[in-house]
Length: 144
Image 1 (cartoon, rainbow, N blue to C red):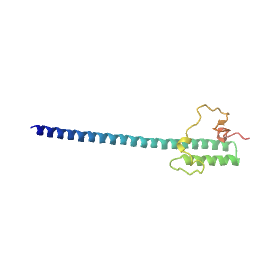
Image 2 (cartoon, one colour):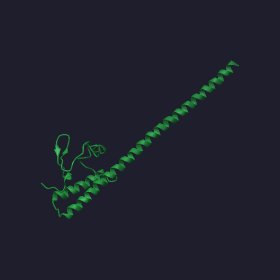
Image 3 (spheres, helix red, strand yellow):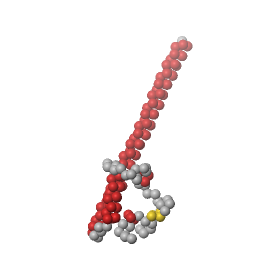
Image 4 (cartoon, helix red, strand yellow):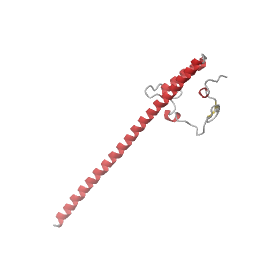
């Protein structure tokens, strides 16, 4: 009788262990699926953000081209800058991903985030890590 009881308890412990392992395996699978979903969503969001920012650049370039034509600007430097900006938008666009020998060495999602925490004003030079720059795009209508 005692052996039968011990056998029943052994079978019950084995069943409980199988159930515990099954639950643990399903929990691990669920956690893994959660991580996959998060990574996939973050990737989707990142690509959407890149496309959005590429289109912001394109809208700006388009508006700038209208301004240049309206004011009869035919300066070669300005026209080169417009082409340069179009290339950068194509570099950023996830559907085009044009190569760029200068920017490809950087992490794209880090460089497209604003670096400054302070507000820049219209005529104020941009402060970089090592120097002050007055960007062409900060005041594109201004000629030296």
